[in-house]
Image (tube, rainbow, N blue to C red; front, side, top):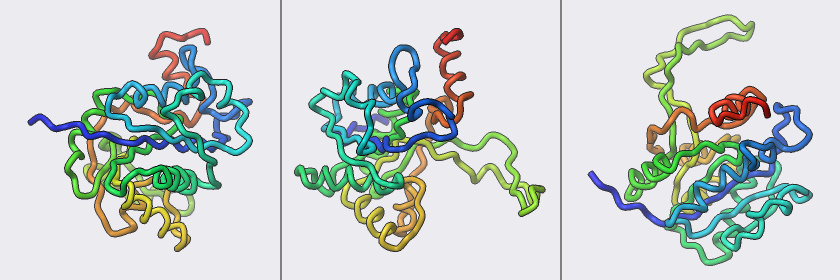
Length: 236
């Protein structure tokens, strides 16, 4: 079955510092194949004909973004990031609203440090969710045996992995619905770690769209090394 590919806005929350990388700069500005991780994360969207525009949320005092060539791209708008991811995404959505975006427009939120998104996955997500009443996210079914730990670091039970998926990005929702869900969760002091969890808290059920397992988020040094090895950058 052939699905239409809808137009969309992209939002990239990139105000974090990535402390677990123990690097001299935020992880999104580390190099991968001659470009920064952030540039790789943006490219899949900037190369897509359905992109209506992109909003990136950055730390107010970010000194690295202005040095990148893509900072001059007229399709990219910069806004201030917030203390948490939800704050940064909400600031970007407010910017879209202020600049004429419609509540029914699709918005794709993608991690700044997830540089290996395949165009085929992006198109698959867009096509599968084009007419979905809620939206959804790229995800990967759990393949390893999963254990639940007790308070002492011992196994309390084995979890049925057939019901567990690992949430990836992009996550795709209507602008108005995501805006309301994030704003309401923040006002209610509910901790949401991604956009799907905000939508879930609002009472809706996002759809899981299976994507590639190599669409990894760079969190630790070994993640970046794995990506470098896949690209043949053994000596960098």
